[in-house]
Image (tube, rainbow, N blue to C red; front, side, top):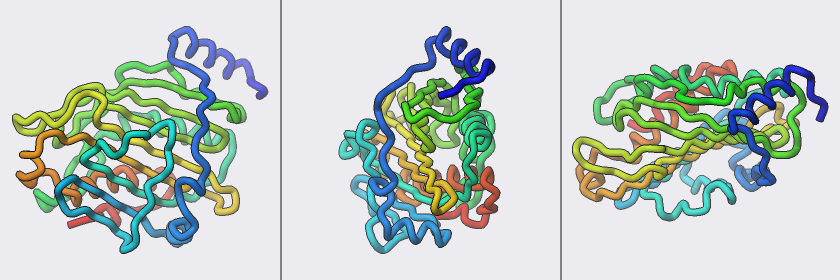
Length: 273
């Protein structure tokens, strides 16, 4: 891999802050995440959403089962989560080194998440999902100019997000690059509660956003997975946590990302009512 002086300086600074690491873990192949039948639907512009919630009726935009992506090495314990949300979409994207660098900068713009909206089924209106979001610590690692290496590159950050339902939470964000594919992995660093009831412990709310480039389709196949332990059964029985609301929460992120790719999907903000 040929690195210019600016890129070498960036990598050196990342190393000095102990925030940069190489790993031999590979991201999954496209066919392991999105089967052909889903791929054709996504290329037609559909958004596929599926939510399962323990002890409650699930939600799906597809009468057929939306496949769980194979993210071995990143998600190995999915059965322990009471809430599992999956969403898949396709974003047009002309690949180049500069385009990849711009996308990475956007994915690491945590303050850009402030004010993104979703549709609340409980309140029956569109409102802010993220009240405020900002970076806590980083490696100043947005300078990834140059051709991506086939070897995995990993960058770590910590950010705070003020969620409209779950309050202020810190997350560790790990951004992995392998070839022309990107995986963003967010893991909660704080325990969660709602009203006066505990929900889970640190590390038990996880979000994965995978972007897989397809040169034939000239774009990125996008897969989002959100996982949450909900250890308090009373909250589930209370009805404040529903599969439809979790579907709308994951949809808010998809619509936010679609805007970056030039897609006006605000009219698709509501996955469930």
